[in-house]
Amino acid sequence: MDEGDELEQAPLCRAKSNSVLATERLLAAKGLNAEQSVGRILSPHHHYYKKWCLIVAGMALLLAIIDPLHLAFATADGLYPYDDFWAVMVYIMMVIFGTDMVLKFFIAYDDPEQGMVYEPKLIAINYFRFWFWIDLATTLPLESIAVAGVGGNQ
Image (cartoon, rainbow, N blue to C red; front, top):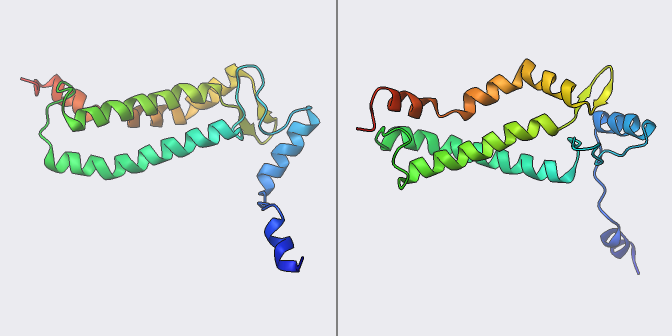
C-alpha cells in the first residue's frame, strides 16, 4: 500500500471554529455534548436542526426568486384562490417559516456569559427581544392581507 491509498482511506476531518470548540468545552463541563438536547430543548448544533436550517435557507432562496416573479406577473387576488400556483407557494412558505418560528422557541442559544442556555423561559425572552419580530414581519403575507382588506378578492 502506498501513501496515496492511505490518504484516500483516512476519514475526512473538518476544522471546527473557535466558537464551536468553546461551546463543546462548556457543554462537556456540564456533562453534555454539542448534539445533545436537554428535555424538549434542542441544541443548535444538533444534526436535525442543521438539516432544518438548510431547508429553511433553501425556501428563503426560492422565495427570493419566486416573489419578484409573482409581483411582476400575477394578479393581486389576496389569499383566496387556492388553486393558483402563487397562492399555493405562499401557503407552503407560510407553513415552513411559521414552523421555523415555533421551533426557535425550542432551540438553545449560546450566551457569552452563561454559555449554552437550555431554559425555555430565557430562550423565549431572547427570541422575543429581536428575531421574533423580524420573523413575524417576514412570515406574514402582508401584501395578500392588504389586498384582501381592500376587497381584492371580489
